[in-house]
Image (cartoon, rainbow, N blue to C red; front, side, top):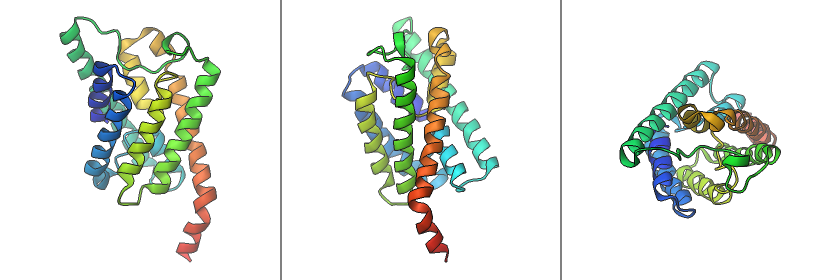
Amino acid sequence: TFLLCNVGCGAAVLNNNPIAGPLIFVFLIAGLGNGFGPISGAHLNPSVSLAFLLTCQMTIKEFALYVVSQLAGAFCGFLCLYQFLLSLKGEVTDLACNGYGELSPSKISVFNAFMFEVHITCFFVFIILSNCTKSNAPFIISFTLGSIAFLSGSLTGGSMNPARSLAPALIMGGVALKQAWLFIFAPLIGAALSAGLFKFFYGKKEDDKKK
């Protein structure tokens, strides 16, 4: 999670390019998934961990430890990025914070931003749940994330990840921190919906396997 926030968001901030940003995450998630997937599943995201908890693929204790790790990794990653940008530019005005209204390039409303984050998180996490056991999962997941990033960049920044959104908001404060609630609750709701969809579409198959 440290690498996702520090390297991924850092590269996106420094490039400030609508094409480079999504591509950075495509390559980064593919690398992180292949490198750390066999160790922990490479969730990197409380929304993903919540979906795994709700589909009975991890315990409450594991979920709590994952979320604490993700929050700590995100905060440390963004704090290091903030210090680096500060030394490079003298001031930091952009730390890849997610936002709506005045913090959104398209000035998306709070309602539309909330619904958008719920929908993209639900879709993204469903893809993870339904493909996580496949050998090519890191590539399927990374290309899905990249596709969503192309759409979401000018709307909310495409959070889908409470840890990734809360950390820079805590560091920057102000409006970014006031808006952080949306990027905590909307992705978690989307993840819960994806867990329900996964059980609906794949639950019978899993029951048949057990029989």
